Structures are given as structure tokens and as C-alpha cells.
Image (cartoon, rainbow, N blue to C red):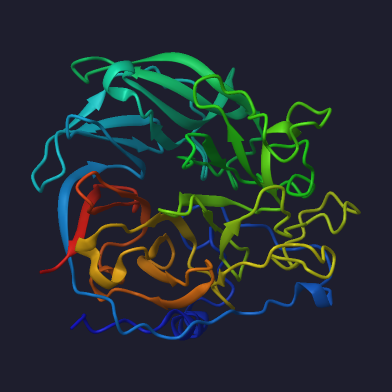
Length: 416
């Protein structure tokens, strides 16, 4: 038997709306709140919640604290020797000695003085290179400043020293992702099944970015992990604009999670909504996901009253497989569970929530559509805001809290 479940997500959204009415994804997380919309509301802006039935098959979970003392732990990277890298938003990298409770944490000496830390921006996502055992390489996504002013969001490749005490900057892999004072910075890199680097980006609250394929904001990007060049089979590889060649999908607001479904290679993202309808999307090459606060390019005002997926303006926009409904959970990382040890949860998609302070477990059908959603009681508002989620080499799920002080690295397994 599984544990007593928290309220199903559709019901929880309605309950939360009574308490959190008017809160946006960022507004309730201690991050930068969006401005009031200056545009009028059209019929296309009416949110349509997509509830799912309650699951009764979630097994009991065991949650252990591996390490603590982080500040906004943003992402997790597993090393071949069993150690773990954790990026922290204020511009720090920590090395954890293992994956069991009581593991030691040490600071990695790296030159991160150019990281622009403001609002949601700072040192964000990370991927460890598949050849790390020989190359010692990992790549981060970070906001960059020049002369104290924000310059861009960029991907930076580092080499960790043999003793793990320091990291040297090897190359700026990709520059020119848009930046703002701290809103909607993205930025989650993940490796695709074919080894390509996928990067989910934010629109930095600029109205035209999501639908402008010559901007790298509000997109899923696809590039070569070693060279940083766009891949020749990208959907817009023949475009004349160099930036458009990187675009894999567009029309996104603020992607915080990117993951790949085992066995199929399908790409799924987790995305912040404005004051409603966070989304989980299944990504199709070249597709538009329908976020357009410029209202067809008619305005530079960032109008957040529009629909997250505006199928009236963009009939071909791809609908989300799940939306949070009338309120937001401020969903963040996304990761698939995999392995026999997960029993009925093998293959389930787990999404962390900042404002919601919980894990959401999405069970998908074979065709990638949603079957049901549940909230494990063991993670429901017990650890505060949850950000990173990565499946470890041992098959356990590792999650970071992001409450701002003494944040933790958690290990989550099925309870036997």
C-alpha cells in the first residue's frame, strides 16, 4: 500500500487559489514579482485548467538528508567517483563527498566573479560531460556581467581539478542569451538521448522574445556539447540568422526544467506560468508553444494576461500535457524515475515546485499524454521550496531545497 496522498493536484490548485489568490509563480517565492498587466484581456487569455484524476498507486517514500549548508542549490551533477557537484545561485559550486546521509561538503575554488546575481539570475543549471572520467569537464548556465552591468546569460565549460578543490574556466560555450535585471532567466541544460545539449531558457520578461526565433530567450535550444555550435539537423538549421539555427522549440515563458524520457528520447519541459497555468510540455522539433505577451508583435509591453498557450492566435501551438489551473505551483526541475526499484512509479515524471513546496508525480501513457497526477505526502510542504531534481547513478532521486539559507540535498527512494 502507498501512503495517504495529499489532495490531487486539480483539487489542491483550487484550495491554494483561496489562500494564494493573486500570487504569481515568482511572487510567492521571494523572487521578482511580475508587474501588473497593462493590456486588456481577450477571450484567448482565459485560462483552461487541465485537471487529472487522483493516483492511488504512489508507494511510500523514504527521504534522507545527504548534506546541508547550501544557499539556493540550483542543480546537481554526479561524478564517476561517487561525489556530487551542486551549483548555488549566489555564484558558488560545492562538492559533496557522497550520496549518503552525513556526506561532507567543500567549496570548489572557481572564478565566478563575473556572475550577475539578481532576482532569479545567478549560477543556475549544470551538466556533467559524459566523458568526465577523462576530461573532468562540466558546463554551467550563468548570468554574466561586464563592468557591474548585466551582459547576457551564457553557457560556460569548466574543468574540475583532480582533487576536486578547484575548477578552471575552459571556454564560453555559448553567449548571447538575453538577460534582464533578474526575471525569467531560465536556465536548465540537459543531455538528449543522442548526446546533444538541450537548454531551456527564459524570455527575461521581454514581450517579443518568445515568438522571435532570432532571440535565444523563451526557447529550447539544441547544440553540440563540445563546440557549442548548433546541430545541422536542428529544425531551423538553414535559417540565415545565426541564432535561429539553435532553436529547437519556441513560444515559451520561463523554462525551469528539461528532461528526456527513457526509452523514447522524448523531451519534456517544466515551465512557469504568470498567475495561472504552469505547464509541463512535450517538446516537438520546430514547434510553437504559444506564449506571446507582445500580442502578435503589436506591443513591447509585457502583457501577462494572455494565455500560456494561445491557440486562437497560433492555431498550431502545441497544448501542454498538464497545466496547474487557476493558480501556480511555480514548477521547476523535471526528471523521469527509472528502474525496477520504483515499482509502479517506474517511468513516472517528477516535477519539483517552488511555491507549491512539493513534488508532483505525473504518470504518463505510452503516447506521452497524461494519465494521472499525485503528490507524495512525504514531500508535501515538509522541506519548503524544492528546485533541482536529478536521478542518481544508484537510481535514487536527488532533490535540492531552495529556501535561501541552510538548504539541503535530499535523497528520495521507495520505502521497502
